[in-house]
Length: 285
Image 1 (tube, rainbow, N blue to C red):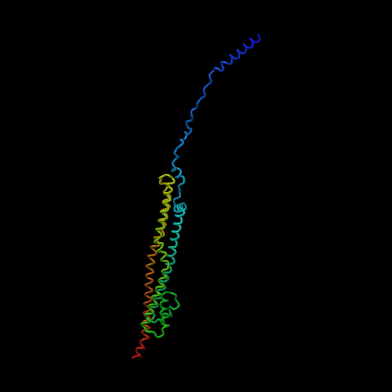
Image 2: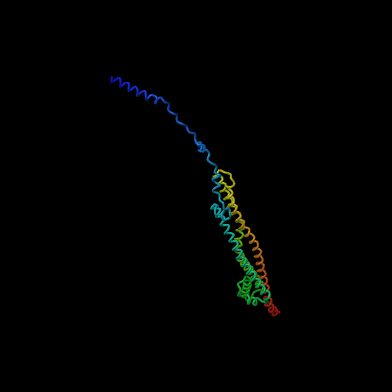
């Protein structure tokens, strides 16, 4: 009897659990991805174009000073050298202009004294203490006369003429100092600036290759910096050439002034020789 009751209770419990196990379980819901979620990237996706990145690093200061600061070190060295060459040009202009003006003024005053004098001794008394080139011509002639007590007049004139030529040449070399520097700057400054331009443009094309873009905004600053070197080359060369030509004419005029001084000294020497030879001729007669 007890066994029958236990079997009945077990059957009722099993029947009560059977409906719950037989009920179907709900399927898991699949949610759609949100519309604003980023799409998955492909494994071989192409990176974004670097033009947007390159434009963020472009220099915005395209003034001459800003272009100098952002230029390559070689281009900077070229620019500094050209600016220094321009400074040297104007320094030579200032110094040489003062030297030529002073030498020409003193030379004309000495020529006036030689033109008014009647003998070498008189001219030497008035110009003996001067350091001017025409005064040196006169002292050279007087010294040669003093060391030749009884010379032949023609031989004396020939010797003094040789000496005066050497004094003129020395004075011409002295007044022409600095002209070679102007000629060098005028001839080489454009090519130095062109070297800086070529170097800067080469770096700009290398930047195009590294940026993988042909956007002109990427290469324009580098080309502007390169062209600034050419502009500085012309800025240094043009004044040097003009100043060289002006000084060449002025130095030519000064050398002509020295030639006039030599002619006046030879005239005074010829007069003195005639004064000496006239009594000797009368005595011989």
